[in-house]
Image 1 (tube, rainbow, N blue to C red):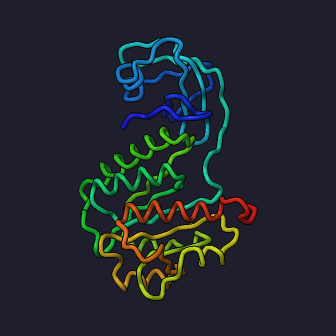
Image 2: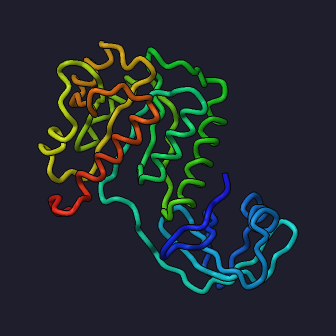
Image 3: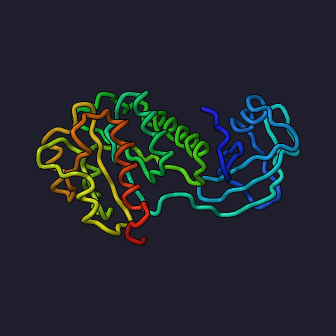
Length: 259
């Protein structure tokens, strides 16, 4: 997935380089270099943006364009934070490949801090043998999403784990939510209103067919609150993005409690 030019302040082709060093130039090599030279056909004098995934961003101009790499002379280097103030983690049941790709992309663009793939009783894909390959793919998608949307950080993709393993560690988050159509679930807004100034939040999204009743009970016992987004039945990738957008808007909207 190639990066695309952005409108406004960040209207540049952007590239990811995990080590920007301290010199007045950087080299785009490997996939990023090939994309810059062969796909985008950047030439001497073109302006680009480069970020390291941890908040450092550079602007520079192409000084040399070779077969598979490009030399960028740095003209500006600064730390930039475009992430939401609230650190949101998503614990999402592993869904089918294309749906999971869409989920990672959308949530990374919205500013998700961490994604934890979760194995549930109704999870369809079994990825034990190719776990590292799946995580690497999702990491690449998260990088492309950050390039696209102007983030200077990356969504962290954690190693997949069974739901009980996640629930055991859940008390590290200030707010814990499990999305379920169960009758006892409350509207998301009502629950968020009862947590005016959290610094961290985790929410759980189930697979096709939802969580098993026993899984919901285990989540509630671990301090999660049952919530819903409304009466519609959403696909996992849609629910994950819609829930994240609603959560971030609630805490970032004008008039929200100061953070």
